[in-house]
Amino acid sequence: MSQRLNGVTLQSVKERDQQDPLARFKAHFTLPEGVLYLDGNSLGAQPVAAKKAVDDTLDQWRDELIKGWNQGWFDSPERLGNLLAPVIGASHTEVSVTDNITLNIFKLLGYIVQQCPAGRKAVLSEGGNFPTDGYIAQGFCQVSGSDHRFLPEGASLADYLDGVAVVVLSQVNYRTGKLRDMAATTQLVHEHGAEVIWDLAHSAGALPIDLNGTGARFAVGCTYKYLNGGPGAPAFLYVHESVQNGGWQPLSGWHGHRSPFAFDADYAPADDISRFRTGTHSALAYAALEASLTLWAEVDMQALRDKSLALSNLFRECLGDLFQTHGIEDITPEDDERGSQVSLIDSEHGYAIVQALIARGVIGDYREPGLMRFGFTPLYLSYEDVWQAARHFREVVESVEYQNPQFHVRGAVT
Image (cartoon, rainbow, N blue to C red; front, side, top):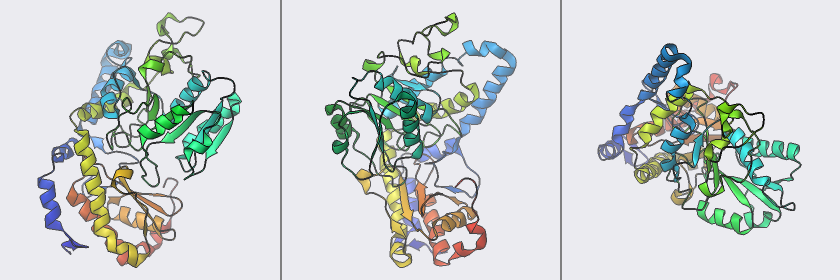
């Protein structure tokens, strides 16, 4: 096996691992033997503590039955929200862990639009954004009578804000990894009399976020990617304290009532972040997520960001000469403009290359058309892991291993 990839030696990356201030966190996660996992941008690895947390909750359900709701289950959305708040630059009482991103966007759209003057009801979606954000905006507009508009990918946002009530934007683009300037964009939207809902799905847990410091008032995000909450883990919703009492959110379920166990006939929203709850949540899912969020209290977010950029740059450096010789396009933004992923395009062979890598135990993911995504999660990826993943990538491409027919069979999920 070669000890050098495009000038980067195996020995040099081993030395970087010895100096890594985040190296100790890898022991807090469990991954299958022989797997190099570069898909934490779609589903994070399992924290070691998650299994015990779920087992303990199963035991609590068995032993305590319904009494468990008064033993930590019921207040999980707010308790976990307070654990998450420092990771995204929010204050305590401003984050609720609840439902999923799709439902949370719908809630915030309704909450914001109902407070806008009659001439400002349009909802602006971002072209090229993750589809669900646009889909739910379209659905909201269908039932509310609001005007749905699209911001073309690459267009100037300022040119599309007239008459707009709310814009839905991703801080990090799910395809390219492009990082938006949250402070400047939030200021621009507010100056035009509109609000912005930030989707943090590909940034929460991947880089430092300062919601309060940037003036952001609304955000949503998921916890199963970089935050390692598990498949289908609950999402979160952020509403700045100053705007928490502006009206109803449209999914007015009983857990968002001011007194949910009074069982009043008429709805009265809670006067804090809990008004954005809907109905009963899964104690098991919250237990797994809490195991991860407790670990995040120990993470230095700037050290995380530094390592994220270093890992993704290492991957690109090890592959650099391959891009020219094999026609693979690197569309990854540069350091100050990207999240925590590398995005490569091979419109003809991208899917098969990813499948060949998965067969070798190097797990990335594929998105149409031709996009190969590799996520870099600093808490459980080492520099040597990334170097080895790049070695496999080179071998798959240089040997045209991806031409094996088995790597062209499409599964239901890509």
